[in-house]
Length: 105
Image (cartoon, rainbow, N blue to C red; front, top):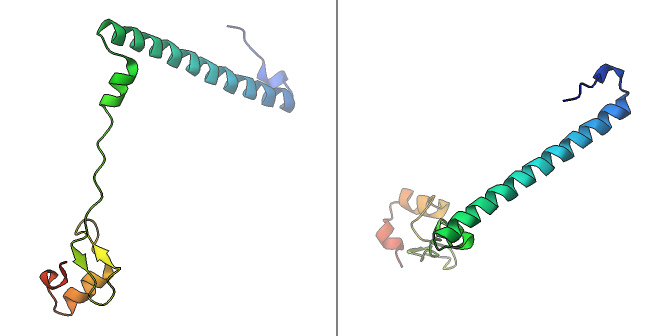
């Protein structure tokens, strides 16, 4: 590896060197990823799969949209599924003595 005397370089030359190093690192990482992808593709083909088959296998399942279980007594547009944080109107109703059953749809 060639030694570079950084003290002898001007600010402009140092900044240009910095940009060149950043580009070289990105290029190196891209080459490594391409090599890894090629190895994985080859191994998958040997086992009778494609990379896409294996990559899709690990995707998490999406939850179905939750169905509302509770409705605001005065504003029917306000609903709550019972999942997640309790809305303020539910907390207010409970504090006022109502039960969740009274708000159930």
